[in-house]
Figure 1 (tube, rainbow, N blue to C red):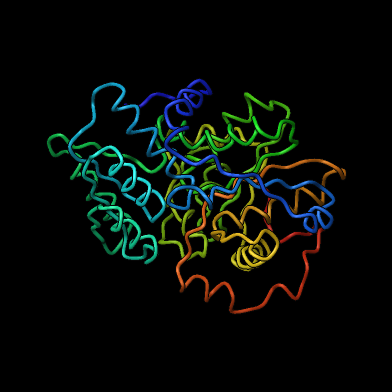
Figure 2: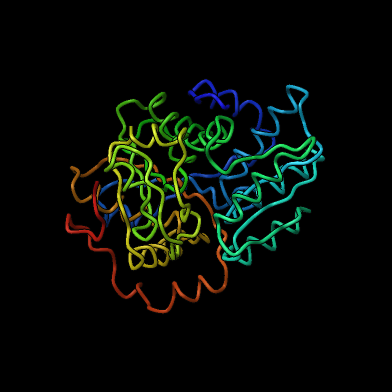
Length: 339
């Protein structure tokens, strides 16, 4: 049974992994700032090792095991993509074999990268079947399961992205992060509450995979009853975790974002920031736009750009319509649903 993470957990995680992951840059767009009437700073985890923040959690998980003399011969993990790559890379770093269990809908580019890092990849028709298979595999001798989000060491590792950013930039008025299983949002909340206690923490998820929103409304974890079909594949988890959910309940605001807005903001962030950015984190900009429209001008927001791994098929879908012909319209009538 894992324990509940704290900001102390995040600080310990950062000490363990700071020499094993990249210190990613903070970027911004003058034009976007003008449109928003606010200063929007982006933590570019799309430039992180393996192209996503997930390496932070995986490295911390294994670094702590090594610290305690408990590294196994084999690790297993279940993932839709970025966690798979992170576990594969981290396992190779620590000389541990890795097997990844995923659904057949995994992004081909993420699947190929996972295998290129030396991990064995096992695919199943559904995410639920993959989850069941990894649970069984974890019972084998000298094998440890590295969960994608619902673990103290994973949450603490993910929280180092916000810690790193906030220590670098100082005062912010709001911090935004996408929500899949809730590991990144939970870690971001821990770091923000400790370093910038007056700042808002705001999450976003796809409307097509709105289990976190449903859970917040119900006051208990409500898993999806269908396989979500969303461009934001990194946030297509069927349920938040029993460790992450209490943190998600503490956020100041939470948004559901439709597929049109996800495609729209993916195009615009590519154009404005000149970075290769996943739809999962571009999605968060819909929440930023709504916040900007309903906040007095001149404030500062931090946005965690969680990753930059996109398949050719997803890119083709995103660019079926050219949204760059319509600059962002900042108004309170944004296409998000506020919880």
